[in-house]
Length: 310
Image (cartoon, rainbow, N blue to C red; front, top):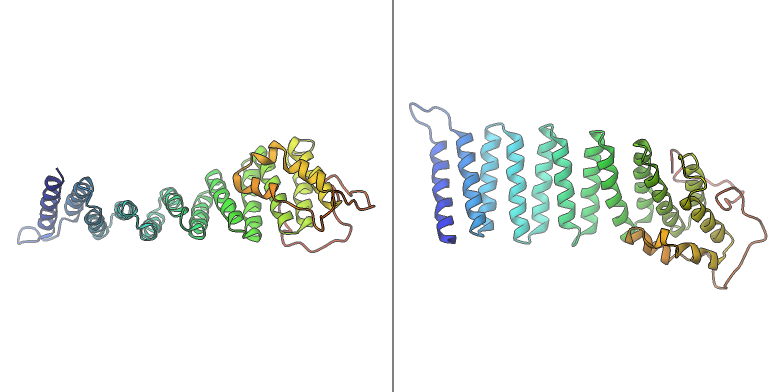
């Protein structure tokens, strides 16, 4: 069966080469015909499990489509070549080709296809290279954002934010979460904004920035339905406990199902959150908490996350 498919592939390659020949009566190469035959050769090689030869055939198909000014079809063929590399477990090379295809999709005016390709590339590389996956998800988010497809952009930023937390790049995670939450606000998905506020608070407290965490909650009061919600009360209680160095109160909030059943990367932040200088069971400051969010310090500090909804 495999031998038959390989012979079939070589027959298609021969036909492709014939399409490219010119003569007295045929002045121009038939790039469209050659690309079509090469695509058939690639499929035959793929069916014979000859992935390296299938990859080469797809790249030849892309070359002929490019000569024929058919950029979209060229990009599709390059992406298919990338998938052959995936089947050979050559993931970094696969991602490189998919990225190349995504640039061509954008040039062709099919940005949505580019965004989906970058998302697929991110999923491929994520198990072996988190940093590269973050880069791909961020690029995909930018593509969708430029197309005003904010729901898709926010979802991809969400993937990026979680991986940044896993990498302990918490400053970058805080920026990513802020952007993500702004997008959900713009499309009026307020319940998701509430969840992003919890994630922000956890990230900022792990960064040691109580002021930024408190600010996120205070600014979320402008979101319809946030004030008095389960999410709001939990964050007010958490911030009050953190500010008063009340380890019991912080632990109680961090063990609520609301936090324990978040995405795993944020749930881990909740479980591992410690109050600063904690050592005893409880250590409360004499001052009562200031404001609805559980005690922002009186001294105003310059904040890196100033501006816009946190």
